Image (cartoon, rainbow, N blue to C red; front, side, top):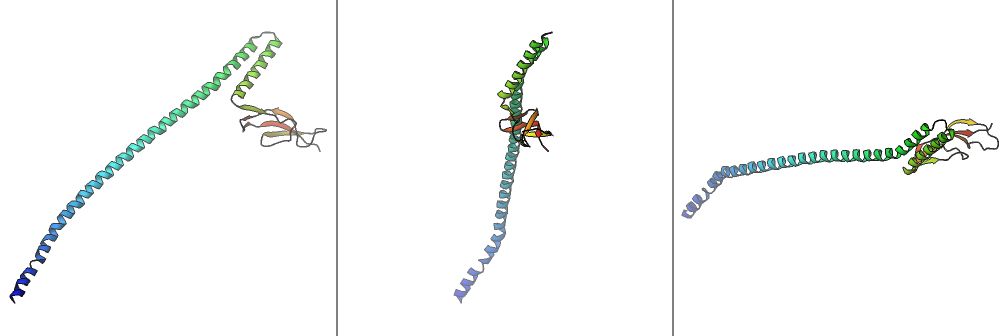
Length: 181
């Protein structure tokens, strides 16, 4: 029995240290959780600050792009308006020609050529539709008229020129279309 007595006391103290260490092992676990929580809070704050910085950087980018776009538009306006100045000069010269109908006519022709030159330099081309079949994609019919020897649906008169900017319609031509009864 002594062997049993020796083993019995050896077995009973074993659960006590386990019970005694259980509350002790909980404290370090709570400390670890607290440390992890503080680390997570610090990381969250760092990420939030990065987010705020990125938002501010994006706002600055938007403002810079808007400013650059406005500068490009202003430069484009300046360029096109400068091209009209010689046309205005021609008009002023035409108006200054007193009593000379040929001078006035010549000044007006020069002005018209100046305007056409400015438009052409910007890629604007007139649309020629007279004598062509009516195309509603490039012309607007404002009336019809009987015309002998002309097929129905043919443009017989152009009351206002149409223009294209490149391949895009800038303004449709206004036309009279043949319609025979």
